[in-house]
Length: 143
Image 1 (cartoon, rainbow, N blue to C red):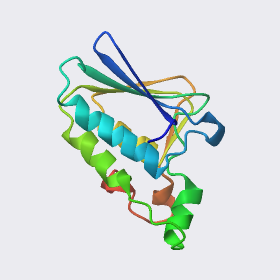
Image 2: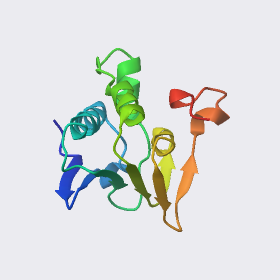
Image 3: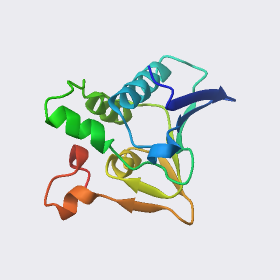
């Protein structure tokens, strides 16, 4: 589906790495789909005891890929909107969810942390919800 989400399983820990550091780990629809698929299937995998979400590089995630978002809004791309499935998979997950955050977590990057059981922040971590300053409700009414 996408090479921008790396999945590793070791010792009961299912690690999901956002692996698009050249784009600050901005999330595409395909990435949301792969994340949702993996979290949903972990519910049926007894070897997945904990799910860890992390980002590669100097940033956890810049949030939505703005270019893809704009293309969908302009009608140039359909986009299946897997973001809803992703948020729902986080909310329904019965496995402990852990996030390791370095650098910025923007928009949905902050929203997903509110669904985690444990969030570990590096000294340089910064959380932001830019929709609030635009007087818009953030994803999943997270603020």
